[in-house]
Length: 215
Image (cartoon, rainbow, N blue to C red; front, side, top):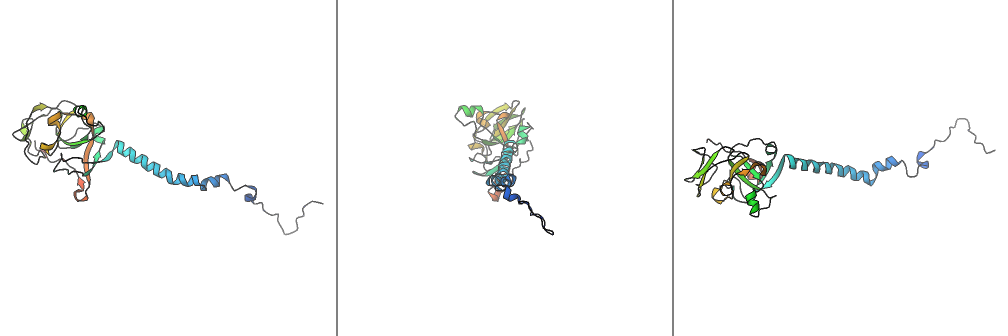
């Protein structure tokens, strides 16, 4: 008595794993639970944010033009992309390059925020002798024909030789620019990068190229 009898032609009933597993497999629950959903949605977002921060720190970042010192080349509130690799690798910058930089020590002493950014154009590299006279920019004894200036300069800059590790930078709107003619050569360690592309407004969308400089 009490023994089960297997009738001919019938098989023993299959065991249902779900009936012996409170709530199903733990691994299956983990794969379909709320935390799995959060991980699937959050991890790609975190990866994209990390990539964006890496690119901003090492390669390129957006900036906007805060003043009219670069008129007419760059308009107030234009948006530009700043490439940072060349300055990080200490590659020589061509004359005419538009650079973005932190305020030099003299401006910081005058109250400028050290983390703020200024934008100007390179008109002199280490070893160049630069001066402004008769309303014109002179470099190494030769007048610079293509000096990116919209009007004659109304100031004089006595000849100075750009020291090693420095650049001479001027705004294109020379008579309304706080630049090297007032505070001297820019230390290269203050450089953030070079402005390479204007992306806003769309009407002026395109690359920012140094003008041809014959001098």
